[in-house]
Length: 434
Image (cartoon, rainbow, N blue to C red; front, side):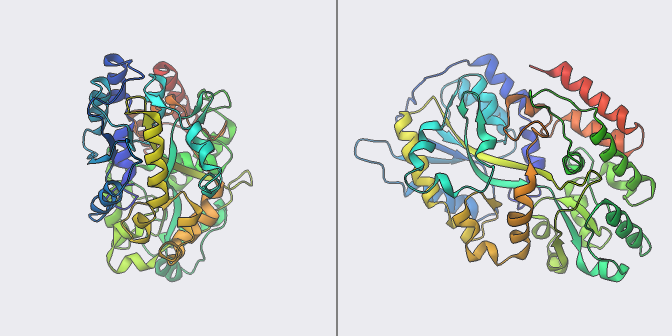
């Protein structure tokens, strides 16, 4: 999520690939069990929402009343620009936070370096106060590794199928329910000069996420149950054959190869894009009169008769560099019990992970939110699919990295067949494996 209301997040979280910045921490650090020198409990958060997010988030943080003798919390908003280097250097120098959000895979990388305080004890304590059972299905499990829970889910991003209602009506078609009816709807949209496969695949685009989402929709994905890359499978090839068909039939804007998400939003706004997979905040990002015309479709059925998509559980993590683990856990409990206004006051933080927040009128008043939370979230999987839902450190190799941009562009430009694109991705991942 981002101050562009979710959809732009992934380009920002894309910076997160974090591999380079966090690798720096590995080289410089290797420090675990360190104490915060200042004695304060530092909370660093990213600007997940719009302009009202950080001020309200800071207010919630500073209202924390620690028990006698425990440190007060301080707040710092970390900008997305160069944030991986910011975290890397702070962790290496032992000047970092006790608690923070960050990239979707950051906690897994720092955990491998020994800098993360696992959340098992915290989550056990939440079984008695209702928080543990308040999470949406599957999101907690995405944080669990063989050594424990590396973080706690905080907000959700996902790739869902959007359409412009007026354009489908003009084309005389209903929202698709499977891949064939999606192709049919694209053909109808093409007849009125509209593209049915809206995407952005430039350096600041995220089409690779939509493509992996379609692989998951067909029962595939990138990683096997052993958390190793297993890209060249029949289900993945079948999904990419579907994508190639969309391109060859002219259902994709040729400009897609160079589009940023900002370019993509413009195409949605002027009515050139009629359908496409994007983030929860697409309507807000597009804005204007088009926003109310943009609808989240129900999940569609892939060629293998399955439903599915990709989602990104952004999270909050605790570090070993803290006044004490007890202090970090006390703050986390306070924060999760009091963070609802970030959603009920519409700061643009994204989709909530707690059922109690998801059921508030501020969230349910938007039918698109309801569709995403009730119909998409339960069938979505993480980057770890199809082998599992739990994330791991090497997932960062596919989380908005050059390898994934190259993968998408080679496919969408028709310079590589589905099997060739998947084989190249497999080879690249294996060469970068840690």
